[in-house]
Image 1 (spheres, helix red, strand yellow):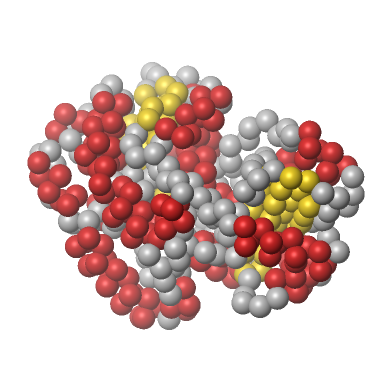
Image 2 (image 1 turned 180 degrees about the horizontal axis):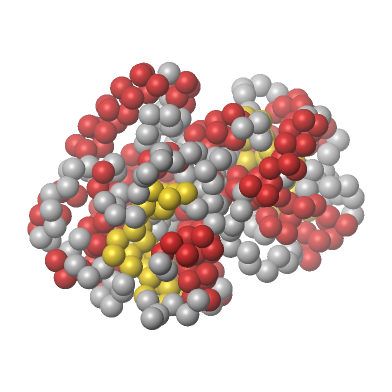
Amino acid sequence: MPKTFVFSTYGARGDVFPYLAIARELQNRGHRAIVATSESYRAEIESLGLEFRAVRPDSPRGENSQKMMHPVSGTEFLFRRLLLPTLRESIADLRAICQNADVLITHTTSLAGPIAAQLPENRHLKWVSSAVSPLALLESDVALPACPRAADFPILNRAILGVLRRQFGMNLKQTQEIRRSLGVSRGDNALWSDAHSSGLQLALWPEKFAPIAPNSRRKAVGFCFLDAPKSLAPEIEDFLRAGQAPLIFVAASFAHSPQWESECESAAALLGQRAILLGASQNSVSESVLRCEFASLDALLPRTLALIHAGGIGTLALGLRAATPMLLMPRAHDQFDNARRASKLGLAHVAKRGNLAAQIGALLEDSALKNRLQNTRHEFENGASRAADILDA
């Protein structure tokens, strides 16, 4: 019997697109799939033939987008300054969307999702929580943005996690008041235990990337890729045909910077390489550098020399599937943890302070890394089908 699935998420493309892949898989099986997220994604989601519903707040812009990407305070800013002030509105939006739904799947940034799932009127609703990257589980081996090196010292890392748990519990205590006013149990901590279902939990990465404990209610399904049409804009095709394969530099979501663009161009010039800058502040092209706001990495990576990016989970997953050499330059949120895991697997280099050109040069000369990428690319399977199997069971 067809069911109605609602996906509640918020954030960058890497926080949204895995759910589009699962939603489309379920839709292809005859189910109704609704993606509930920021208004700014409406056109893109509807162009894929998926059902969209807006949930406040919208994606951050301007100064707020820069504050959200701060390496130390970015996560706190996201939850306290962007999500918490509109939590009642978010719940109201999601409440209306879930009226006739059968299953609600929530991302960890969806503060409203767990509350909406437990409203007295939604006792019929099955709640499945999920995470797109291991950091969201906040377990003892994660690399935290404020002190990523502590991940190598489990006792220290657990102590830091304990402090953060108490701090966020205090900072987000308003969620407890809202829960009580809506007839939902008080809960414990909006960013920890309250974010995870007592039933099914989905980990949207492969077991190889971050193992899941045996007999856990959590299921690792693999990276979920949205295999959309792989066309490139004419100016990108012209640039690719005009010379050797370029380096690809990708700006962190919500964090465009003229300084970043200058550093990338200088590094490419020192290496004598051509470059494409994705997420650039303006479109422009020269003989050796193309700047553009967006391009399909699915289409671009097979024609790429190397990929330099912040380590967001979506871009990292695409690079691993394409077996593209990557230099990771983590800036905030889960990027430090993702970079550490990819490096420990021998599948990427992590940038250090110093000469960017030299570090890219070392990446290009690492034949062992290239072999490992080719030998393991099949392990980063499309998890959307497996996720749909589990949800449809």
